Length: 212
Length: 212
Image (cartoon, chains in turn purple, cyan):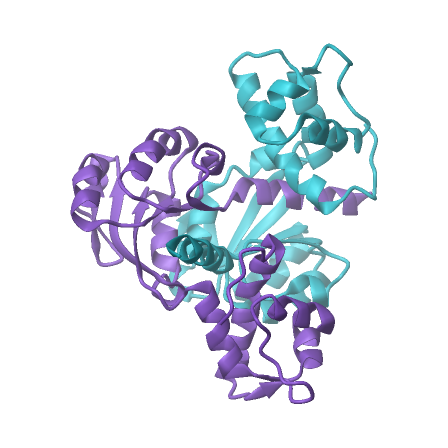
């Protein structure tokens, strides 16, 4: 498949959605779909879909539509969900626990190899089949096991304190639930932020504007 | 304060971030900040910040910068976080529990008045000081208590099944953790989606591209 460094962030953000929709169609046993039908299901225009997929070399045949399984597999390859990168979760509070238990990491290209929390009361408790480790052991664990992705389910200040150590230990990607802004300080790493409270405030704004 | 219906979504998405940053500065006892300093802290350009805040009438005085507390309060008003809307959480599994326990709803303008799950084994368990109710009681509860926001921590199909009932019962805003696309089916309601697995796949893409 063609890779393209100039693919815009908004196209990249839409790829997971294509992947999900195509996965659902595949589950239903549907073999082929026109870009028109795909666009109706997804709420994008057909031309938008063609443009998006053309960024990666295009997959449709004029007049035949898209083969769902092959498009699904290709987008999966582009997203890299078939790879297996070693990942660690830092923070095993309410949020960390939910993230650990709720997400299908393996289907998204990640293998959780360690879970850490600085609360000694949690040390040794099992989560997702793994013992929660104390953050004091983070350095040795990373040296021995070389995880490349860290999932930060910790507060701002803790993320700010840990980030330099994690980058030095070889972490190249962060799934960041904290509000600490990793990307401005470490431009070389991949960061995907989930700012739940920002999302809730955005909802508040939209609900307020309905009130009027 | 001025309201403006033509405010772009990207400006709205940035408002919570301003609110957070200003809140942190306020906590530190800082009284005033120039748009230049604010821009350095936030990673936006100073002119971007002036433009954003001008959408709502502007708050700065040329040469004096921004009064932090007053800007914080104004943005809070715009976001509507000082209001109190009745909200219900649907789904008390790992994710629902984490959302219920982790988020400061009251500080974001929401008051959680009920938590529902269709698993009878959870009925009556306490969460966030509230008893988990069975979803069979959703209709009567909404009739009696008139919540306006629903937080969906349930799978796709469950969200699709419940959405029409919830809209009919007066729900005007959804914080949607499911992948069911509410907004295309109910254009009149406010929807804010949190698609965690899409975010994880986006990270996968970015980490893959670092590998190259």
